[in-house]
Amino acid sequence: MTLSDNELWPAIKNNRESFNDLFRCYYPVLFQYGNKFCMDRGILEDCIQELFIEIWQRGPDVQVRSVKAYLLKALKYKIHKHYRDTEKIKTNEITDDLCFVISHENFLIDQQEDRQRTEKLLNAVHQLSNREREIIYLKLYQKLSYEEIVEVMHINYQAARNLFYQAIKSLRKSIRPL
Image 1 (cartoon, rainbow, N blue to C red):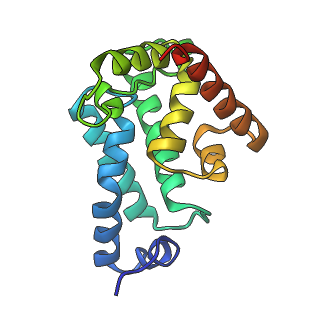
Image 2 (cartoon, rainbow, N blue to C red; image 1 turned 90 degrees about the vertical axis):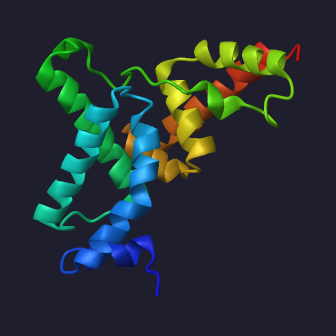
Image 3 (cartoon, rainbow, N blue to C red; image 1 turned 60 degrees about the horizontal axis):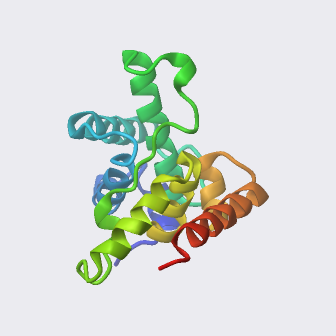
């Protein structure tokens, strides 16, 4: 029997197999998301492992509405903390706008049927702010609801909707000649 996220979260406290299921289910999602902030695979894997170690040690004491949103937000915090602690980025440079990159393969359309269109789209995406790129990724690629995005990006509901609308509007304006 497969448990839903809301059933799995409290079950991990006393059940190692449920914890393993949680890890197996979310590791790929966390790795893919974390890779947008941290290109160093070793650091990223360490941050994900630290996150799960803390969850195992503390147990699921935190009440969460969305397990996925909670884990994404926690990983983002871990990556920020790692860079702050190792001083790879000066403390005053660590903001919610930590460089967020959407990789080229996210936009390959029908196995690169039209390379010129893809390049134009990528140029348009790179013109977006870090926050706009992040919300596009969370909404379109991770399929998070606005409520989950609010939790991950630490912004209010209306700001999330406005930011997504603005990002889509900017992309449409940039690629209109296509």
